[in-house]
Image 1 (cartoon, rainbow, N blue to C red):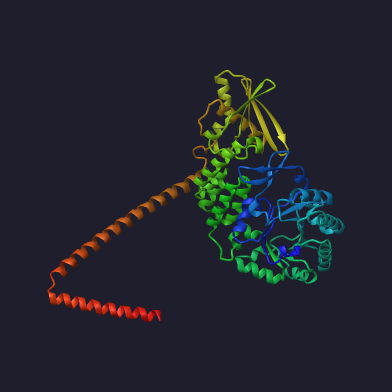
Image 2 (cartoon, one colour):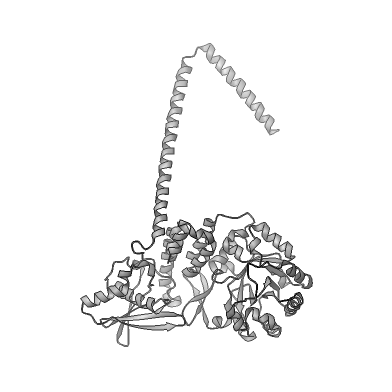
Amino acid sequence: MLGKQYAGKVIVAPMVRVGTLPFRLLALDYGADLVYTEETIDWKMLRSVMKENKALGTVDFVDKTDGTVFFRTCAQEKEKVIFQIGTSDPQRALQVGKMIEKYVAGLDVNMGCPKEFSLKGGMGAALLTQPEKAKSILTTLVQGLDIPVTCKVRLLPTLEQTLEFCRMVEGCGVAAIAVHGRTKEERPRHPNNNDIIREITKVLKIPVIANGGSKEMINYEAIEKFRQDTNSASVMVARAAMWNCSVLRNEGILPLDTVIQSYLKYCIDYDNAFTYTKYTVQNMLRDLQETPKGKAFLETQTLEELCKIWDLSEHFRVIRTHQYKVSQAKEEESGSIVMPTTIEEVNILRHNQDGQEIVEMPLQFIRGNFCNADVPKMILNTYVFKNDLSGPKFTFEMREKFFTATVDVGGIKYRSTLLEKSRRYAEQCAALVCLHACRVVDKTYGFVPADGARRYQHAIGKEKMERDKAEKRKKKENGQDSQINKDSSDQDKKVKCKKTVNLSVEEENHVVQNELANNTVNLQHVNGGER
Protein backbone atom coordinates (compact mmCIF):
# COMPACT_ATOMS: atom_id res chain seq x y z
CA MET A 1 0.00 0.00 0.00
CA LEU A 2 2.78 2.45 0.88
CA GLY A 3 4.41 1.82 -2.49
CA LYS A 4 1.50 3.47 -4.32
CA GLN A 5 2.86 6.83 -3.21
CA TYR A 6 5.86 6.19 -5.48
CA ALA A 7 4.17 4.57 -8.51
CA GLY A 8 3.31 6.46 -11.70
CA LYS A 9 5.16 9.58 -10.55
CA VAL A 10 7.52 12.19 -11.94
CA ILE A 11 9.96 12.93 -9.12
CA VAL A 12 12.61 15.63 -8.71
CA ALA A 13 15.91 14.17 -7.49
CA PRO A 14 17.96 15.32 -4.50
CA MET A 15 20.41 17.99 -5.75
CA VAL A 16 23.05 19.71 -3.62
CA ARG A 17 22.47 23.48 -3.24
CA VAL A 18 19.65 23.32 -5.80
CA GLY A 19 16.93 21.35 -3.99
CA THR A 20 15.99 24.04 -1.47
CA LEU A 21 12.40 25.12 -0.78
CA PRO A 22 12.05 27.63 -3.69
CA PHE A 23 13.16 25.09 -6.29
CA ARG A 24 11.01 22.34 -4.80
CA LEU A 25 7.91 24.57 -4.89
CA LEU A 26 8.66 25.59 -8.47
CA ALA A 27 8.96 21.94 -9.46
CA LEU A 28 5.59 21.19 -7.87
CA ASP A 29 4.06 24.13 -9.74
CA TYR A 30 5.35 22.69 -13.02
CA GLY A 31 3.94 19.22 -12.42
CA ALA A 32 6.32 17.20 -10.23
CA ASP A 33 4.50 14.65 -8.07
CA LEU A 34 7.23 14.35 -5.42
CA VAL A 35 10.32 16.42 -4.62
CA TYR A 36 13.42 15.27 -2.74
CA THR A 37 15.47 17.54 -0.51
CA GLU A 38 19.21 17.77 -0.94
CA GLU A 39 21.05 15.23 1.20
CA THR A 40 21.46 16.16 4.88
CA ILE A 41 24.08 14.31 6.94
CA ASP A 42 22.59 12.75 10.10
CA TRP A 43 24.94 14.44 12.59
CA LYS A 44 24.12 17.87 11.14
CA MET A 45 20.44 17.25 11.71
CA LEU A 46 21.08 16.02 15.25
CA ARG A 47 22.85 19.25 16.21
CA SER A 48 19.99 21.38 14.89
CA VAL A 49 17.00 23.03 16.52
CA MET A 50 13.55 23.37 14.94
CA LYS A 51 12.07 26.89 14.79
CA GLU A 52 8.77 28.17 13.46
CA ASN A 53 9.53 31.12 11.22
CA LYS A 54 6.55 33.49 11.56
CA ALA A 55 7.92 35.99 9.03
CA LEU A 56 8.07 33.37 6.26
CA GLY A 57 5.39 30.93 7.37
CA THR A 58 7.91 28.07 7.41
CA VAL A 59 9.44 25.49 9.69
CA ASP A 60 13.23 25.88 9.85
CA PHE A 61 15.90 23.50 11.06
CA VAL A 62 18.79 25.66 12.24
CA ASP A 63 22.35 24.54 12.92
CA LYS A 64 23.03 25.46 16.55
CA THR A 65 26.77 25.90 15.92
CA ASP A 66 26.51 28.70 13.34
CA GLY A 67 22.84 29.70 13.11
CA THR A 68 22.45 28.69 9.47
CA VAL A 69 19.16 27.29 8.16
CA PHE A 70 19.91 24.05 6.29
CA PHE A 71 16.34 22.77 5.88
CA ARG A 72 13.29 24.95 5.42
CA THR A 73 9.84 23.63 4.59
CA CYS A 74 6.23 24.82 4.50
CA ALA A 75 2.69 23.44 4.48
CA GLN A 76 2.46 23.75 0.68
CA GLU A 77 4.88 20.84 0.15
CA LYS A 78 4.18 18.72 3.23
CA GLU A 79 2.49 15.87 1.35
CA LYS A 80 5.04 15.91 -1.48
CA VAL A 81 8.51 16.41 0.04
CA ILE A 82 10.88 13.49 0.70
CA PHE A 83 13.71 14.17 3.14
CA GLN A 84 16.99 12.49 2.16
CA ILE A 85 19.67 11.70 4.74
CA GLY A 86 23.25 10.53 4.55
CA THR A 87 23.99 8.08 7.34
CA SER A 88 26.14 5.13 8.35
CA ASP A 89 24.45 4.38 11.67
CA PRO A 90 20.95 2.91 12.26
CA GLN A 91 20.27 4.70 15.55
CA ARG A 92 21.40 8.12 14.31
CA ALA A 93 19.24 7.61 11.26
CA LEU A 94 16.23 6.77 13.43
CA GLN A 95 16.77 9.84 15.60
CA VAL A 96 16.75 12.00 12.47
CA GLY A 97 13.62 10.27 11.23
CA LYS A 98 11.82 10.97 14.50
CA MET A 99 12.80 14.64 14.31
CA ILE A 100 11.57 15.10 10.76
CA GLU A 101 8.63 12.72 10.18
CA LYS A 102 6.03 15.25 11.32
CA TYR A 103 7.01 17.66 8.54
CA VAL A 104 7.62 15.46 5.46
CA ALA A 105 5.93 12.80 3.34
CA GLY A 106 8.78 10.30 3.44
CA LEU A 107 12.40 9.58 4.36
CA ASP A 108 15.05 8.44 1.88
CA VAL A 109 18.49 7.01 2.65
CA ASN A 110 21.28 7.96 0.25
CA MET A 111 23.12 4.79 -0.79
CA GLY A 112 24.48 6.05 -4.09
CA CYS A 113 26.55 9.21 -3.55
CA PRO A 114 30.05 8.59 -4.99
CA LYS A 115 31.70 11.66 -3.40
CA GLU A 116 34.82 11.07 -1.34
CA PHE A 117 33.30 12.73 1.73
CA SER A 118 30.44 10.20 1.77
CA LEU A 119 32.64 7.21 1.05
CA LYS A 120 35.11 8.03 3.84
CA GLY A 121 32.22 8.45 6.27
CA GLY A 122 30.78 5.06 5.37
CA MET A 123 27.74 6.70 3.77
CA GLY A 124 26.31 6.91 0.27
CA ALA A 125 27.79 4.42 -2.21
CA ALA A 126 29.98 2.95 0.57
CA LEU A 127 26.85 1.14 1.81
CA LEU A 128 26.61 -0.76 -1.50
CA THR A 129 29.56 -2.86 -0.34
CA GLN A 130 28.21 -3.19 3.23
CA PRO A 131 24.83 -4.88 2.74
CA GLU A 132 24.45 -5.87 6.39
CA LYS A 133 24.87 -2.30 7.59
CA ALA A 134 22.52 -1.07 4.86
CA LYS A 135 19.97 -3.67 5.92
CA SER A 136 20.23 -2.65 9.57
CA ILE A 137 19.69 1.03 8.73
CA LEU A 138 16.64 0.39 6.53
CA THR A 139 15.05 -2.17 8.86
CA THR A 140 15.46 0.13 11.86
CA LEU A 141 13.84 3.04 9.99
CA VAL A 142 10.95 0.98 8.58
CA GLN A 143 10.12 -0.43 12.00
CA GLY A 144 10.58 2.83 13.87
CA LEU A 145 8.86 5.44 11.68
CA ASP A 146 5.28 6.15 10.66
CA ILE A 147 6.23 7.54 7.23
CA PRO A 148 7.39 5.58 4.15
CA VAL A 149 11.10 4.78 3.93
CA THR A 150 12.97 4.47 0.62
CA CYS A 151 16.58 4.42 -0.56
CA LYS A 152 18.46 5.61 -3.63
CA VAL A 153 21.22 3.38 -5.00
CA ARG A 154 23.69 3.08 -7.88
CA LEU A 155 24.63 -0.01 -9.84
CA LEU A 156 27.20 -2.48 -8.54
CA PRO A 157 29.96 -3.85 -10.83
CA THR A 158 27.85 -6.81 -12.05
CA LEU A 159 24.18 -7.40 -12.73
CA GLU A 160 24.08 -10.28 -10.23
CA GLN A 161 25.50 -8.13 -7.43
CA THR A 162 23.08 -5.32 -8.25
CA LEU A 163 20.05 -7.63 -8.24
CA GLU A 164 21.14 -9.23 -4.97
CA PHE A 165 21.48 -5.86 -3.26
CA CYS A 166 18.12 -4.66 -4.56
CA ARG A 167 16.39 -7.83 -3.33
CA MET A 168 17.91 -7.23 0.11
CA VAL A 169 16.57 -3.65 0.09
CA GLU A 170 13.08 -4.84 -0.85
CA GLY A 171 13.22 -7.40 1.98
CA CYS A 172 13.67 -4.59 4.51
CA GLY A 173 10.12 -3.39 3.88
CA VAL A 174 10.90 -0.15 2.05
CA ALA A 175 8.17 1.53 0.01
CA ALA A 176 10.29 1.96 -3.14
CA ILE A 177 13.84 2.02 -4.48
CA ALA A 178 15.38 4.66 -6.75
CA VAL A 179 18.09 3.37 -9.08
CA HIS A 180 20.67 5.57 -10.80
CA GLY A 181 21.74 3.63 -13.89
CA ARG A 182 25.49 4.15 -13.41
CA THR A 183 28.14 2.73 -11.09
CA LYS A 184 29.87 4.90 -8.50
CA GLU A 185 32.87 5.22 -10.84
CA GLU A 186 30.78 6.44 -13.79
CA ARG A 187 29.87 10.06 -14.44
CA PRO A 188 27.13 11.85 -16.41
CA ARG A 189 29.21 11.64 -19.63
CA HIS A 190 28.84 7.85 -19.49
CA PRO A 191 25.63 6.32 -20.89
CA ASN A 192 22.92 5.39 -18.44
CA ASN A 193 22.39 1.62 -18.20
CA ASN A 194 18.67 1.53 -18.87
CA ASP A 195 18.79 -2.18 -19.61
CA ILE A 196 20.02 -2.99 -16.08
CA ILE A 197 17.24 -0.89 -14.51
CA ARG A 198 14.82 -2.88 -16.68
CA GLU A 199 16.23 -6.14 -15.29
CA ILE A 200 15.77 -4.82 -11.73
CA THR A 201 12.09 -4.10 -12.38
CA LYS A 202 11.59 -7.74 -13.39
CA VAL A 203 12.68 -9.14 -10.03
CA LEU A 204 11.21 -6.56 -7.60
CA LYS A 205 7.59 -6.08 -6.58
CA ILE A 206 8.06 -2.61 -5.03
CA PRO A 207 8.10 0.46 -7.33
CA VAL A 208 11.44 1.05 -9.05
CA ILE A 209 12.20 4.74 -9.68
CA ALA A 210 14.53 5.14 -12.68
CA ASN A 211 17.18 7.87 -12.54
CA GLY A 212 20.07 8.99 -14.75
CA GLY A 213 18.46 9.90 -18.08
CA SER A 214 18.59 13.71 -17.92
CA LYS A 215 20.74 14.01 -21.05
CA GLU A 216 17.82 12.82 -23.21
CA MET A 217 15.04 14.58 -21.25
CA ILE A 218 14.41 17.57 -23.51
CA ASN A 219 10.66 17.66 -22.79
CA TYR A 220 7.88 15.89 -20.91
CA GLU A 221 7.45 13.27 -23.66
CA ALA A 222 11.12 12.30 -23.28
CA ILE A 223 10.57 11.73 -19.56
CA GLU A 224 7.78 9.28 -20.38
CA LYS A 225 9.98 7.59 -23.00
CA PHE A 226 12.69 7.07 -20.34
CA ARG A 227 10.11 5.46 -18.08
CA GLN A 228 9.11 3.07 -20.87
CA ASP A 229 12.72 2.30 -21.81
CA THR A 230 13.48 1.32 -18.21
CA ASN A 231 10.09 -0.32 -17.52
CA SER A 232 10.08 1.61 -14.24
CA ALA A 233 7.15 2.60 -12.06
CA SER A 234 8.33 6.22 -11.87
CA VAL A 235 11.02 8.55 -13.15
CA MET A 236 13.41 10.67 -11.10
CA VAL A 237 14.62 13.81 -12.91
CA ALA A 238 17.79 15.61 -11.83
CA ARG A 239 19.89 17.81 -14.15
CA ALA A 240 17.17 18.21 -16.78
CA ALA A 241 14.93 19.81 -14.14
CA MET A 242 17.83 21.94 -12.91
CA TRP A 243 18.54 23.25 -16.42
CA ASN A 244 14.91 24.20 -17.07
CA CYS A 245 12.37 23.12 -14.49
CA SER A 246 9.48 23.55 -16.95
CA VAL A 247 10.60 20.29 -18.59
CA LEU A 248 8.23 18.78 -16.01
CA ARG A 249 5.24 20.51 -17.63
CA ASN A 250 2.94 18.32 -19.68
CA GLU A 251 1.91 21.53 -21.50
CA GLY A 252 5.43 22.20 -22.80
CA ILE A 253 8.67 24.02 -22.06
CA LEU A 254 8.59 27.67 -20.96
CA PRO A 255 11.15 30.37 -21.89
CA LEU A 256 14.13 30.26 -19.53
CA ASP A 257 13.67 33.87 -18.38
CA THR A 258 10.12 33.02 -17.31
CA VAL A 259 11.38 30.04 -15.30
CA ILE A 260 14.14 32.10 -13.65
CA GLN A 261 11.66 34.84 -12.74
CA SER A 262 9.33 32.34 -11.10
CA TYR A 263 12.23 30.75 -9.23
CA LEU A 264 13.52 34.11 -7.98
CA LYS A 265 10.07 35.06 -6.71
CA TYR A 266 10.09 31.98 -4.50
CA CYS A 267 13.65 32.82 -3.41
CA ILE A 268 12.45 36.26 -2.30
CA ASP A 269 9.32 34.91 -0.64
CA TYR A 270 11.27 32.30 1.34
CA ASP A 271 14.54 34.18 1.94
CA ASN A 272 16.69 31.65 0.10
CA ALA A 273 20.43 31.93 0.69
CA PHE A 274 22.00 34.07 -2.05
CA THR A 275 24.84 31.62 -2.72
CA TYR A 276 22.37 28.78 -3.33
CA THR A 277 20.16 31.01 -5.47
CA LYS A 278 23.04 32.18 -7.65
CA TYR A 279 24.36 28.63 -8.01
CA THR A 280 20.96 27.41 -9.21
CA VAL A 281 20.46 30.25 -11.70
CA GLN A 282 24.00 29.71 -12.97
CA ASN A 283 23.12 26.10 -13.76
CA MET A 284 20.02 27.30 -15.58
CA LEU A 285 21.95 29.81 -17.70
CA ARG A 286 24.84 27.49 -18.65
CA ASP A 287 26.22 28.81 -22.00
CA LEU A 288 24.14 31.98 -21.67
CA GLN A 289 26.59 33.21 -19.03
CA GLU A 290 28.64 34.57 -21.94
CA THR A 291 25.86 36.93 -23.03
CA PRO A 292 25.68 40.52 -21.67
CA LYS A 293 22.86 39.45 -19.36
CA GLY A 294 24.86 36.43 -18.22
CA LYS A 295 27.90 38.57 -17.48
CA ALA A 296 25.75 41.00 -15.51
CA PHE A 297 24.46 37.99 -13.58
CA LEU A 298 27.99 36.85 -12.75
CA GLU A 299 28.70 40.28 -11.22
CA THR A 300 25.85 39.99 -8.72
CA GLN A 301 26.64 39.72 -5.03
CA THR A 302 23.15 40.02 -3.53
CA LEU A 303 19.69 38.64 -4.21
CA GLU A 304 18.50 42.20 -4.80
CA GLU A 305 20.94 42.57 -7.71
CA LEU A 306 19.76 39.28 -9.18
CA CYS A 307 16.17 40.48 -8.99
CA LYS A 308 17.02 43.72 -10.74
CA ILE A 309 18.31 41.83 -13.79
CA TRP A 310 15.02 39.91 -14.08
CA ASP A 311 12.75 42.93 -13.41
CA LEU A 312 11.75 41.89 -9.89
CA SER A 313 13.06 44.88 -7.93
CA GLU A 314 9.62 46.01 -6.80
CA HIS A 315 8.60 42.50 -5.73
CA PHE A 316 11.84 42.22 -3.78
CA ARG A 317 11.32 45.56 -2.05
CA VAL A 318 7.71 44.90 -1.05
CA ILE A 319 8.26 41.34 0.22
CA ARG A 320 11.51 42.08 2.06
CA THR A 321 10.05 45.13 3.78
CA HIS A 322 7.11 43.03 4.98
CA GLN A 323 9.37 40.17 6.12
CA TYR A 324 11.62 42.49 8.05
CA LYS A 325 8.71 44.16 9.84
CA VAL A 326 7.22 40.80 10.82
CA SER A 327 10.59 39.45 11.97
CA GLN A 328 11.11 42.52 14.13
CA ALA A 329 7.65 42.19 15.64
CA LYS A 330 8.34 38.51 16.44
CA GLU A 331 12.00 38.96 17.38
CA GLU A 332 11.66 37.48 20.86
CA GLU A 333 10.11 34.32 19.43
CA SER A 334 12.05 33.64 16.25
CA GLY A 335 14.86 36.17 15.96
CA SER A 336 15.73 38.32 12.98
CA ILE A 337 15.79 36.26 9.79
CA VAL A 338 16.30 38.73 6.96
CA MET A 339 18.80 41.47 6.26
CA PRO A 340 17.18 44.89 5.73
CA THR A 341 17.28 46.36 2.23
CA THR A 342 18.21 49.90 3.34
CA ILE A 343 19.80 51.54 6.39
CA GLU A 344 16.44 53.18 7.22
CA GLU A 345 15.07 49.75 8.12
CA VAL A 346 17.98 48.81 10.38
CA ASN A 347 17.34 48.73 14.11
CA ILE A 348 20.35 49.76 16.17
CA LEU A 349 20.42 47.62 19.30
CA ARG A 350 22.29 49.21 22.21
CA HIS A 351 22.72 47.25 25.42
CA ASN A 352 25.02 47.00 28.41
CA GLN A 353 26.83 43.80 29.32
CA ASP A 354 28.79 43.81 32.58
CA GLY A 355 29.32 47.54 32.32
CA GLN A 356 30.40 47.38 28.65
CA GLU A 357 28.28 49.29 26.12
CA ILE A 358 27.62 47.19 23.00
CA VAL A 359 26.06 48.32 19.73
CA GLU A 360 24.68 45.70 17.30
CA MET A 361 23.17 45.92 13.80
CA PRO A 362 22.19 43.21 11.26
CA LEU A 363 24.64 44.20 8.50
CA GLN A 364 26.75 42.23 6.04
CA PHE A 365 29.96 43.13 4.23
CA ILE A 366 29.31 42.79 0.48
CA ARG A 367 32.74 43.21 -1.11
CA GLY A 368 31.44 44.23 -4.52
CA ASN A 369 29.71 47.27 -3.01
CA PHE A 370 33.04 48.93 -2.16
CA CYS A 371 36.00 50.30 -4.07
CA ASN A 372 39.48 49.44 -2.79
CA ALA A 373 39.97 52.92 -1.34
CA ASP A 374 36.77 53.14 0.68
CA VAL A 375 36.35 49.84 2.53
CA PRO A 376 34.95 50.26 6.09
CA LYS A 377 38.21 49.61 7.99
CA MET A 378 40.06 52.32 6.05
CA ILE A 379 37.34 54.91 6.67
CA LEU A 380 37.14 53.88 10.34
CA ASN A 381 40.89 54.33 10.79
CA THR A 382 40.64 57.86 9.37
CA TYR A 383 37.63 58.65 11.59
CA VAL A 384 39.41 57.42 14.75
CA PHE A 385 42.59 59.36 13.92
CA LYS A 386 40.81 62.65 13.18
CA ASN A 387 38.69 62.46 16.35
CA ASP A 388 41.50 61.23 18.59
CA LEU A 389 39.56 58.16 19.73
CA SER A 390 40.92 54.96 21.20
CA GLY A 391 41.03 51.96 18.85
CA PRO A 392 40.06 50.53 16.59
CA LYS A 393 40.72 47.19 18.29
CA PHE A 394 39.28 44.09 16.63
CA THR A 395 38.49 40.71 18.18
CA PHE A 396 36.83 37.79 16.45
CA GLU A 397 35.03 34.57 17.22
CA MET A 398 34.78 31.52 14.98
CA ARG A 399 31.54 29.51 14.87
CA GLU A 400 32.02 26.31 12.91
CA LYS A 401 32.95 27.64 9.44
CA PHE A 402 31.76 31.22 9.99
CA PHE A 403 33.09 34.30 11.75
CA THR A 404 31.82 37.21 13.81
CA ALA A 405 33.96 40.18 14.88
CA THR A 406 33.75 43.06 17.33
CA VAL A 407 35.53 46.41 17.08
CA ASP A 408 36.22 48.60 20.11
CA VAL A 409 36.18 52.33 19.32
CA GLY A 410 36.24 54.95 22.07
CA GLY A 411 35.40 52.34 24.69
CA ILE A 412 32.25 51.15 22.87
CA LYS A 413 32.04 47.76 21.13
CA TYR A 414 30.36 47.42 17.73
CA ARG A 415 29.43 44.22 15.97
CA SER A 416 27.00 42.70 13.47
CA THR A 417 24.42 40.10 14.43
CA LEU A 418 25.05 38.30 11.10
CA LEU A 419 27.87 35.86 10.40
CA GLU A 420 30.52 36.24 7.70
CA LYS A 421 32.46 33.66 5.68
CA SER A 422 35.92 34.95 6.68
CA ARG A 423 37.67 36.79 9.50
CA ARG A 424 38.53 39.68 7.18
CA TYR A 425 34.90 40.11 6.13
CA ALA A 426 33.73 39.89 9.76
CA GLU A 427 36.11 42.70 10.76
CA GLN A 428 35.00 44.86 7.83
CA CYS A 429 31.40 44.22 8.88
CA ALA A 430 32.09 45.31 12.48
CA ALA A 431 33.69 48.49 11.13
CA LEU A 432 30.62 49.05 8.93
CA VAL A 433 28.35 48.83 11.98
CA CYS A 434 30.47 51.42 13.80
CA LEU A 435 30.43 53.82 10.84
CA HIS A 436 26.64 53.67 10.48
CA ALA A 437 25.96 53.79 14.23
CA CYS A 438 28.15 56.92 14.53
CA ARG A 439 26.69 58.37 11.31
CA VAL A 440 30.11 58.76 9.75
CA VAL A 441 28.99 57.57 6.30
CA ASP A 442 26.09 58.19 3.96
CA LYS A 443 22.99 56.03 4.51
CA THR A 444 23.56 54.18 1.21
CA TYR A 445 27.14 53.21 2.08
CA GLY A 446 27.53 49.44 1.90
CA PHE A 447 23.95 48.94 0.67
CA VAL A 448 24.48 49.88 -2.98
CA PRO A 449 27.42 49.14 -5.29
CA ALA A 450 30.13 51.77 -5.60
CA ASP A 451 30.32 53.63 -8.92
CA GLY A 452 31.79 51.43 -11.63
CA ALA A 453 31.54 48.23 -9.59
CA ARG A 454 28.92 46.64 -11.85
CA ARG A 455 30.00 47.24 -15.44
CA TYR A 456 27.69 44.74 -17.15
CA GLN A 457 24.71 45.40 -14.89
CA HIS A 458 25.01 49.08 -15.76
CA ALA A 459 25.14 48.21 -19.47
CA ILE A 460 22.02 46.04 -19.48
CA GLY A 461 20.25 48.60 -17.28
CA LYS A 462 20.99 51.24 -19.90
CA GLU A 463 19.74 48.92 -22.68
CA LYS A 464 16.51 48.31 -20.74
CA MET A 465 15.94 52.05 -20.34
CA GLU A 466 16.39 52.53 -24.09
CA ARG A 467 13.95 49.69 -24.83
CA ASP A 468 11.37 51.17 -22.46
CA LYS A 469 11.72 54.58 -24.12
CA ALA A 470 11.33 53.02 -27.57
CA GLU A 471 8.19 51.16 -26.48
CA LYS A 472 6.68 54.36 -25.07
CA ARG A 473 7.48 56.19 -28.31
CA LYS A 474 5.90 53.41 -30.34
CA LYS A 475 2.75 53.43 -28.22
CA LYS A 476 2.53 57.18 -28.54
CA GLU A 477 2.96 57.02 -32.33
CA ASN A 478 0.37 54.24 -32.59
CA GLY A 479 -1.98 56.34 -30.55
CA GLN A 480 -1.47 59.31 -32.87
CA ASP A 481 -1.96 57.08 -35.94
CA SER A 482 -5.20 55.78 -34.46
CA GLN A 483 -6.40 59.34 -33.89
CA ILE A 484 -5.49 60.32 -37.46
CA ASN A 485 -7.34 57.28 -38.82
CA LYS A 486 -10.33 58.11 -36.62
CA ASP A 487 -10.36 61.71 -37.83
CA SER A 488 -10.14 60.54 -41.47
CA SER A 489 -12.99 58.08 -40.92
CA ASP A 490 -15.15 60.78 -39.33
CA GLN A 491 -14.44 63.11 -42.28
CA ASP A 492 -15.39 60.37 -44.78
CA LYS A 493 -18.67 59.83 -42.92
CA LYS A 494 -19.44 63.54 -43.04
CA VAL A 495 -18.77 63.66 -46.80
CA LYS A 496 -20.92 60.58 -47.36
CA CYS A 497 -23.78 62.08 -45.34
CA LYS A 498 -23.50 65.31 -47.30
CA LYS A 499 -23.73 63.42 -50.61
CA THR A 500 -26.71 61.40 -49.36
CA VAL A 501 -28.61 64.54 -48.47
CA ASN A 502 -28.25 65.75 -52.06
CA LEU A 503 -29.71 62.54 -53.55
CA SER A 504 -33.05 62.69 -55.33
CA VAL A 505 -36.04 60.77 -53.98
CA GLU A 506 -35.71 58.19 -56.75
CA GLU A 507 -32.01 57.70 -55.99
CA GLU A 508 -32.74 57.31 -52.28
CA ASN A 509 -35.34 54.60 -52.96
CA HIS A 510 -32.83 52.81 -55.21
CA VAL A 511 -30.17 52.88 -52.47
CA VAL A 512 -32.61 51.57 -49.87
CA GLN A 513 -33.71 48.70 -52.12
CA ASN A 514 -30.08 47.71 -52.76
CA GLU A 515 -29.30 47.70 -49.04
CA LEU A 516 -32.37 45.56 -48.27
CA ALA A 517 -31.35 43.09 -50.95
CA ASN A 518 -27.79 42.88 -49.56
CA ASN A 519 -29.09 42.32 -46.03
CA THR A 520 -31.34 39.49 -47.25
CA VAL A 521 -28.41 37.79 -49.00
CA ASN A 522 -26.21 38.14 -45.91
CA LEU A 523 -28.92 36.73 -43.64
CA GLN A 524 -29.39 33.70 -45.91
CA HIS A 525 -25.64 33.16 -45.93
CA VAL A 526 -25.45 33.25 -42.12
CA ASN A 527 -28.40 30.90 -41.65
CA GLY A 528 -26.95 28.51 -44.17
CA GLY A 529 -23.66 28.52 -42.26
CA GLU A 530 -25.39 27.63 -39.00
CA ARG A 531 -27.13 24.66 -40.54
